Length: 92
Image (tube, rainbow, N blue to C red):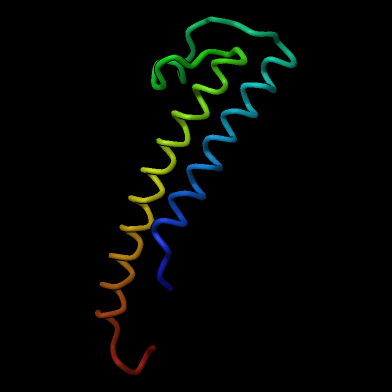
């Protein structure tokens, strides 16, 4: 089965971005906003556990997930094609 690289990248980017966005709001709801440096803020510049930081994190995580999803789907298709060629003709 071949993956659609663009669709997979877009889907993974949306999931990753919305996941970070919702996680940030979950933390804000229970612990309040904070400008503390977090592990994620070291990776995503401008991200903080604040309403504005959640939007910045959404954009960074979307871009990160998009690139990661594109690379994953491309590699999957590449390896799947090589495995199909390596199979004997009678086992398809």
